[in-house]
Length: 119
Image 1 (tube, rainbow, N blue to C red):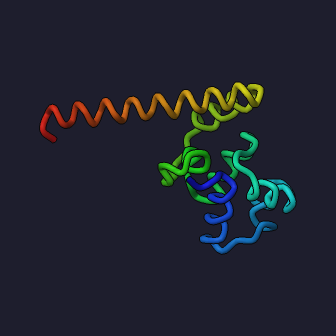
Image 2: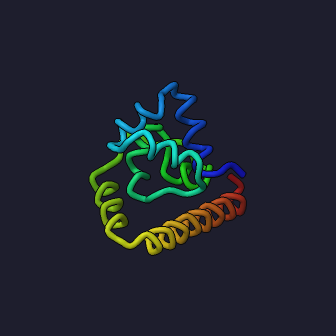
């Protein structure tokens, strides 16, 4: 499975932007982008800005799944991100994993119900 940093680098290259350009878009410096691209995992404070700059979902950055970014991120989405960013890093990571698992559970349940209904 591809590491978080590899996904960020590949997507940046797909969009044809340099590390310096991406750094400017997310309000950081080029060495931070270089470091990000070499690791598996990154600071949660960069998730929302990266998702916008790379035009992908936050889930995709972390898991490699669900690349599509909703075209309209609401004020509620931003508020949610701000609440998460206020938590300690370990709590953010734990909460994110929990939410991803809940989404998968709902997806599985929806698929099971759809099969039962014959759709």
